[in-house]
Image 1 (tube, rainbow, N blue to C red):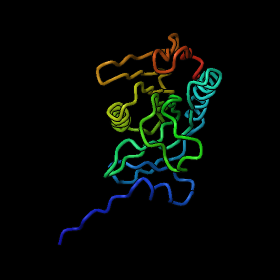
Image 2 (tube, rainbow, N blue to C red):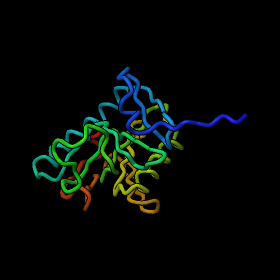
Image 3 (cartoon, one colour):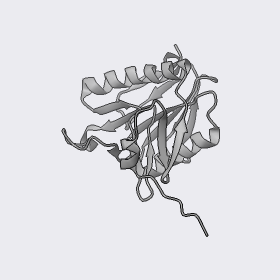
Image 4 (cartoon, rainbow, N blue to C red):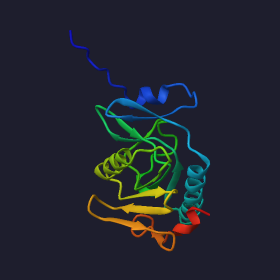
Length: 182
């Protein structure tokens, strides 16, 4: 007799107890992640601080830290980028559902942890781009680089001397790569 897999939905993921384990949902299957380390957290917070100040001052949208985004449905995929930006015109109405954001962020930031597998990081980038994310930043604290993905073909690696440019995704936002690792 064949065993049939039961997929988990985004709503079921949201209803799981807050037991300190970070989880994402990939094609209906739960993926557990270990908590972030200091270097990871510092890099994510440095980006969050800069991006949020810029976005808030100009009322461009909202910056969120580790919030779930439903990228696909049936089966559901929910990813929670370390930092995400969603344009103002795409935000849910005030008082909307307390659930995950339904849709891809305009900008997703993934900070690579020491034990992350690069294949998994590449998969996340592909999922974000396929779901409509316009820019994905992959931050590598070990090598002190940021790889900017605008599509599968438009990929640029930045070193510490370079500057991230929000371009048409986050107009006017610029962040020196070295400031991420300060």
